[in-house]
Length: 147
Image (cartoon, rainbow, N blue to C red; front, side, top):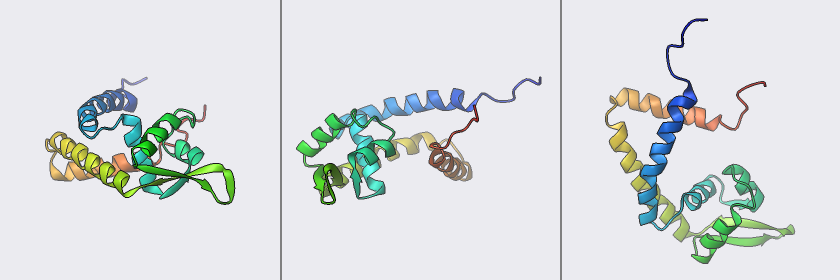
């Protein structure tokens, strides 16, 4: 068996993900957000209205785990939860203008910080890296192995 010519993807991405998460923490703190609150606000960007269960699935969280996060975001006026008119047992979750504004400010600050890391790459490599990473990220819900 030939020796590998590069580290495994997880061996490269997991430490990078941890470092990025740690770098985001002070930015989120300045905006008064936890990581899960930020993830929820980003998840609501994709579609303006979700059921709580669909939102949990979209952000890959257990639906019971995000309930306290949703409670906090609602208390702060960042989201609205309303009964679904077609099924009153289900809550619909909607981002408020204040929630969208906070999410956008936090994301701007995080991405500005990321630009400092990406600035070390030549522009063409940076563009390719971001495009490929986004493509792989979009596929991350698809099983990779057949095991």
